[in-house]
Image (tube, rainbow, N blue to C red):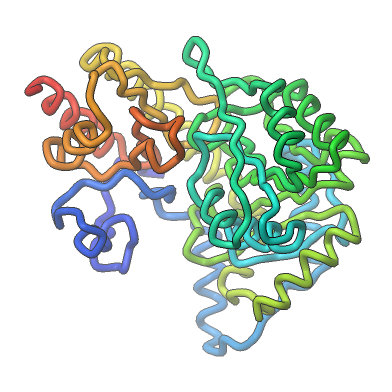
Length: 390
């Protein structure tokens, strides 16, 4: 695979490249914000889609449940040591859609939903836009690594009578891959206070430590029975535009409530090509993924070394997982508006401002490392030049 070649994504209705002007950015800005890759997906996935499109009829479609289960069961067992059951599986057009359905299914208007900021900003949107109360037990940055304040976590649940907890695992943008001990501690608290847990595990296949990703549902039957596990091939195989996610809900009662909200939203059969791509990805995509992970790991190392050498005022929060890098820019001594001006107007970059991840993200920027290294290098050199001109 040649991952160094820059593929022009302009004029493909690409959100990353073609939406700049209508979102208030200069047309020629260099975008490294939205969480998709600038790499073509695996050849077997493309071939499966091409074979399906050659048929020429795109009617309502559903995957064969036995065939899909066999493919997914093998992947999660071999890649994550997690044994799924066929009856747990529901499919949605995306993980964010699933988060919204969970909020509606397991809480009432006015109920409190717990998150841990700085966190992926749609977590807040699906809570607030559905008339629920957002409560955050902010992560604590200690010696360059984010940690959970377990006392605050439980206190927030008690004080606000929290009904639902949205867990980001691996965490975006903090880059944490939670340990078994950390997960068991929060699981015990949630079990004690009857808090349903929805685990967004979409980044599970990008882990950079010797410790593996641990699915929340694998912690024990009691915890799994009060959990919804959200997975998708979209981040892993760069398929976000095909709108397909696999949601696992071991508890029948929770599964029925969740399914009811999907029905109430008027959604039934999924994107035909998304179904095809999903099966092909998990069945044949591993060799491609291994190469992509090795390349991205190199990009992460390159970024850390570049910052230390050329922009020591900006520190990389060393990621344990995900391909989204969290840059601590507080050493520049800039206000949020000044930092945004530096990145957008002076460096000509479209990144994700840390402020949109919650108050705990102020002074940070998120940059996507899933791109050709020359693009990443250009972005970092632009920041270097902008900082030098301060």
